[in-house]
Image 1: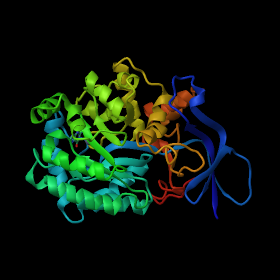
Image 2: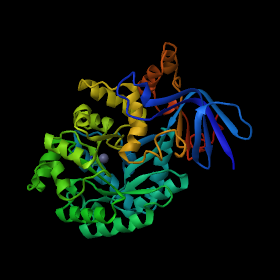
Image 3: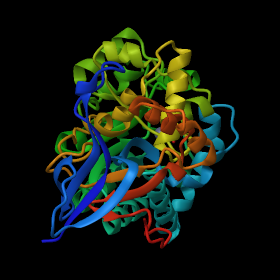
Image 4: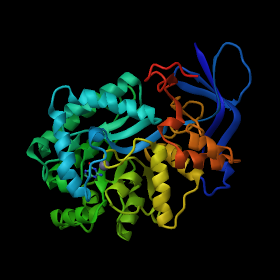
Length: 434
Ligand code: GUN
Ligand code: ZN
């Protein structure tokens, strides 16, 4: 059986860092070795010369687990950077128009292929995606993931009102299509399905009932939706569901909350909503670049975290403005600065790796460099640009290096990506990696 050893400076988290000095929250090997066999990590530790294995030397770069992105819309790849005042205008003007293209034969395959190239280029090895309302967009999404052997989560958007007719399904068809897609894709290869009612505004009570039935029938699938992103969205949701106590209460009333539920944005939550998220184990997903771009608001990480709410971090493409989790962490940092909640770089990189794996209940599979986990890995170069190289000369600690990567880094800092042990970034451009 062929073995590969990756040599480099290896960093992986074991728990959430409680501060800059929490050295127990991570493992770091200055001259480390990751041994890989049949796509899995079989050992990690100090490098020792051995015979019989291919050695790939990535020194002086850092090797981390691949980034995980817990909320994005692959079908919005071509409307990133669309000029809009706020969420509902952006949805109506660009998003609902763009997503209609996925009814066309062949369109989804082309976009899915380009989308996966971008994920890899930016060091993201797992993502949780909304597809469009068309089943064929889901087939393209999982089909491409399967070709690339990537662990991906996704689902058909369920939406049966307040959108163009061409994009709307019905409560029954969304149930039938979702059921068929779960059977086709959930657990096939590395694919996992997310039942995906878009948000309360675009789902009738009958459709949320259908989602409830799907969740009850498929408790091992994820659930993803949007929650409390924007003031106008909240008001309209409460008009449409006047009997629910608040926005979170709508999803609660339809049995959609729980430890496998990912709630994009979760910005403007009251105390009751925060308590319900904590009690149900639901995940609030912080989408910093999107929240700034659409002017949606400042995520309150500290309040949610103190209340015991699980938190993920994500790009939210195409409301988000970059595929890159480094850029996302940078903007997360700036939002939290405005909140007086400065996040240290260990906590940032934890969130994008083991933290997001935990949000998906996938620790033990991805998000850490540990025996038994998949060899989904990235190689980070903190001197990838002239400005980074200049700053790096004055750096003397791992924390400073991580902060430099987060603040100045982008796809150029991702020197290589491994998916299930196979090189994925250098092969994109046909380059022989160093
Ligand atoms: N709320 C409902 N749909 C969407 C979407 O596509 N993007 C964002 N940012 N919020 C949403
Ligand atoms: Zn979204």
